[in-house]
Length: 272
Image 1: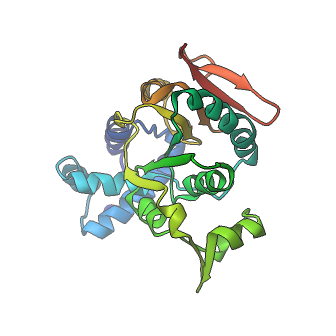
Image 2 (image 1 turned 45 degrees about the vertical axis):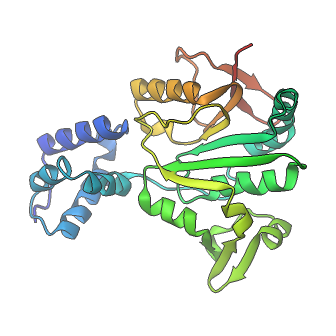
C-alpha cells in the first residue's frame, strides 16, 4: 500500500470532495484526508490512492462511504443551550401566533447535518414538553453520514453520550438499558432520519425552523451561499434559521434578517 498521497493526488481528491459535497479541504487538513484514505484503501484491499479514486468516481455507494469517513460527527444533547432557550422562549411562541390564524397546528423543523441524532432528539424533547394540544411537530433529520444516521434511528446512547441532559428529562424521555439509555419511541416517531447532501436541494418546503449548526464552516464561501439559498427556498414565508455560534451570514448577500434576542442570535425569513 502506498504510504503517502502526492500533491497531485491531494488536489484531485480535494476537488472531487468539493464537487460532490461542497466540503472544502484546506492544506492544513491534509493529514485528516490522508488518514481517511488509508482506512478506505485497507477496507477495499487496494494499493494506491489512484486506484481508489477510480473506484469512487464510478461507485455511488462507495462515494457515500468515503464522504461519511471524512466528516466530523461531534455533537451532544442541548449543545449551545442559548439557542434552545431562544427556541423555547421566542421562536415557538412566535410560530404559534403566526400559524394559529391559518388553523395550522403543526411545526415543521429540519435538523440539517444532524450527525448521530442528539440535536433532533433535543428538539423533539422540547416540543413534546412545550406544545399544548392540538399542536404537533414533524422533524426531518438529515446528514451525509449513513453511519451517524443509523445511530440516530436506533436512539441508543452510551452513558458517556448523555452528558448535558437534565436528570428529570433523562427519567422522563429515556429508558435505562445495559450500557446506556434508549430514547422513547414516542419521540422517535416525531423524527424522520434521511440521507441528504447539502450540495443538493432537499425537496423540503414550508419549513418553520431550520437548524444547520457547525456545518457551514466546512464549506467555502460559494458553497455556503448556495446552501443558504437552498435553505431559503425550503422555508416557509415566516420562519427561522439557526447556524453555529462561530458561523455568520454577515458579508453574504442573502435575504435573511439577523435577529438578536436576550437569549441568542439567529436569522429570520419574513415575507409579508
